[in-house]
Length: 143
Image (cartoon, rainbow, N blue to C red; front, top):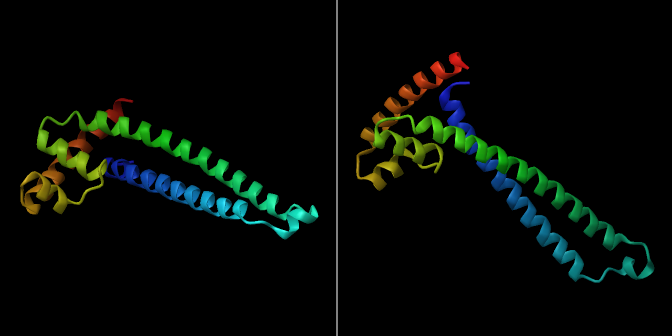
């Protein structure tokens, strides 16, 4: 895996976590609506109401477990990325890479925030990636 793919995988995991959290919230909302309704089947003992609530609860629990695993992966990846990025000597290069791949900001937003033109931030980004790629490849050969 090259360094850029490693850095971009942070956003992919972050996005999956966000989707899981949105789905959990959606399912909780649905289950609350189901529990707040009086089901005609429940009074007859057919259990349709409780089955739906139970199904929601199981799905929520499964998603929470999956989300916890993704969060653990994200934390491990973030630590790995921060260790690699901290090896950059140039503070601006470190900041650009962190904002781009950890904070998921565009070059335009980074330039605006830091007071540089977008072209300069793009150049700094390219140089920093090249340095990181060289360091990352030499580390992988050693390991």
